[in-house]
Length: 195
Image (cartoon, rainbow, N blue to C red; front, top):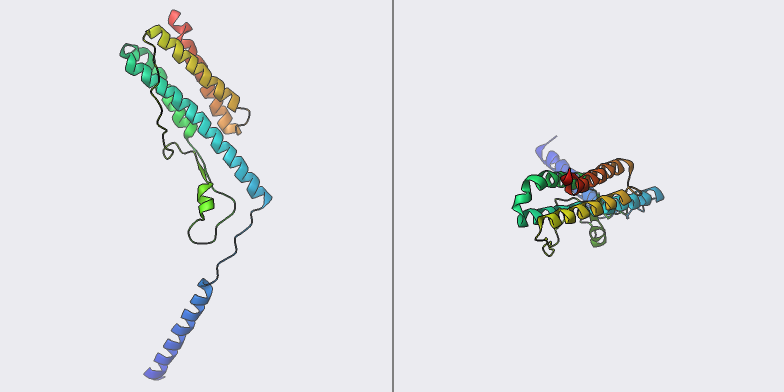
């Protein structure tokens, strides 16, 4: 085969490949419709994500109360620091495994649709924006601060206990442990001080 024949054959091959590739990329695939199982899985994932967000928020609110109490009454640090560390660990544990829920309807290849992007839910504690809240009021009497923290511990513990009804099994066990720890904290802040 001559050099001219090889070039012609190579040119024809390149042209055919280019035509085939342009034909493949010009068609957009139709969006896929999700099945009932996918829609139910998305609903369950959204409910769990909302539950995690509520649980983490309750623990972070309690942690803010501890921080405010410690800032206002540094003399209480030996008593409050161990409890505060425990509450901080609870907030982290409750937020671990946070899910990002994407809609079951897949967007065509390329950039995600604005509807899909706006309907996603994220509960990851590291990515969620922290709302700016007013400072937590703290009593001037240290005994009143301890009572207020005990009340906040009970309220948070009750919220975690109530969430057990709708939580998936693994998360329910974690919530039960955190609720029990909150009840123990409330005891240590009030009755435990008298012993």
